Amino acid sequence: MKIFAAKDYTDLSRKAANIISAQVIMKPDAVLGLATGSTPIGTYKQLREWYEKGDLDFSQVHSINLDEYKGLSGTHDQSYRYFMNHNLFDHINIQKENTDVPNGLAGQAEEECARYDALIRSRGGIDLQLLGIGGNGHIGFNEPADTFQAGTHVVTLTEETRQANARFFESIDQVPTHALTMGIKGIMTASKVLLLASGEGKAEAVYNSFFGPVTPSVPASILQLHRDCIVIADEAALSLTREKISWEGAVYDC
View 1 (cartoon, rainbow, N blue to C red):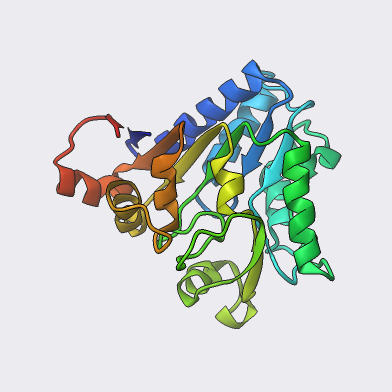
View 2 (cartoon, helix red, strand yellow):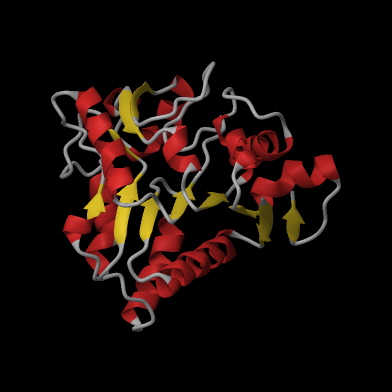
């Protein structure tokens, strides 16, 4: 694992977009695991700009998103399908039929989870998985728990996660209580993982995830065991780590 320090959010976004761009250039039919939330928005904006300049071609790319709220349709403006269309897919030449997001309206959620795991296998696995990180260390919607959940599953969102996401809704009451999320196995079997962390609110999660024990109570800590994991964090998100381990450099090789 390597941790790269970014000066600020703009620098973080550009560094992340560089890594994703390299993946697409080196393997035009790459399978990209994509994330939502506020952190990757700048990365997607940079990818759009490079596409508009003619530097990138997404026509053969497949994408597999991490998660979706249970009970929201893809046209709901807070669904993750809508987020991806609005922030990336509608602005590049990726084929919509090659973009996959869990179906939040699936009548049989467990069957949808099994379908999603089969889909990942049918794509040959994920070449690069983009992740954010929650303040409690969650990745995707894999919340702190007693065990790591392997496959795609339905999760009850913690109050902390719902409160963190309430800013995207008119009120906390509108935030869904459940979601479908790719499991830890799907994430860990990706050839490369790229995790982004921005802001002081992520400082404790970054330190606990990458310098504490591997434990399901801090889901992102499992990434310490991944064979090719890159973390890009801005100075605010690295503040506690720098203090605890007396690190002053730009790259930390764990």
